[in-house]
Length: 509
Image (cartoon, rainbow, N blue to C red):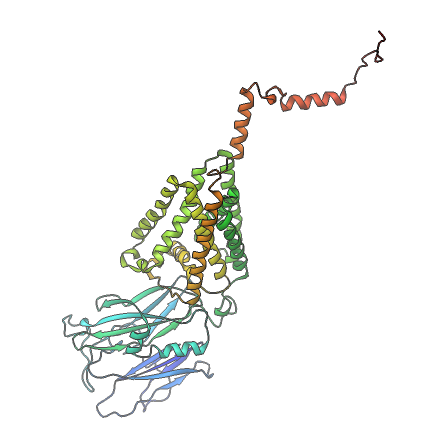
């Protein structure tokens, strides 16, 4: 057997295999149309040549690379037990994506067989002498961040062209048996190139074979709106730039200007919740949703400040700040490989553990409210700077919170694997995040060590001052007429005529 793999970047290729004696017409079951296309041909005992025909749907030229892979009689046959796709033997990986997830599907393989032999039956028996003994391994290879060039893709595809290259250069995501489903979901990373590869192994004969690798950027190169080259909307850049500047302010002086901190934290808390609700319940366009989210965020920030001003409950406000920090910490935990553990693909388990981590952080704030509030200012404020940078250049760190948002908005996202690449810019931003966070915490702890824990509520102070005046007769202000009495007295002075007092010259004694 011999396989032909051909890879393209932006064009769709119609790859056709037909016998030499047939007319050159793409036939159903003998052709496949895809960006990353491959065909596998069985050779007869006397066959020495094989022909493939290539064409594009519109007849235009297309650049790409082709790889020819030979297989022996002991190698597994990728896609030989296909019962879903048009080709009789289909070694291709089929890929679909949307805003939330990227799904790959491939046909089961069969054990190897020699030229001219009858292929083993696929589903007659489940013993160790049939295809059910085969195991599969799924791999991911991430292209350089922000690099959408054709040369980068071609050089990357060369790194995953065969079994050995896949093992050396790619990251193994999972292993599965022949009894498992051959459909998987991964978190979509718009603008980030990813190559998916599948290797099938025969543990009895110790042989292996590779399916045709497939790549995606989770975006369209042909779209004039929100294409791969124009992922960042202006509205998003403006929104997160303002958020980043506010976060930088909170990072270094948030506790000192407590009302400003409460407004920023209330804005973030309300905006996140409202964006989730409005996205689930309405079909509004993105820019309208973002504008309404910003408006409701302002309302939420004002409400949080006014609640502190009116009631003076510092602990209630600080607990909200603690929940925001807990949300970020819990998101970081599930951003690690821990989030890909199969048990957390269950929504109930995931959200229970997520909520427990999130609720644990405010308990620290009850014991050390000032220190906890300053830590929250430093960590959360520094992360908003990372989000602001992400509005202008791609970084994987934005998926710390974006993956949680996707899971809230899409019920099927729970089955997706959320691994993302950490490349040079990510390590630079992690360093920036750590430096800003630690610097902000240290500066605020130093500045606030001689001050009171929290500023008093203006309304509560006014009430206390009013009560003090009522009860303290030694206070001169106690004898001062009320405001209404002073106003009435002033009106009388302006409207009544003053009577003369009589003789005003001094008397001579």
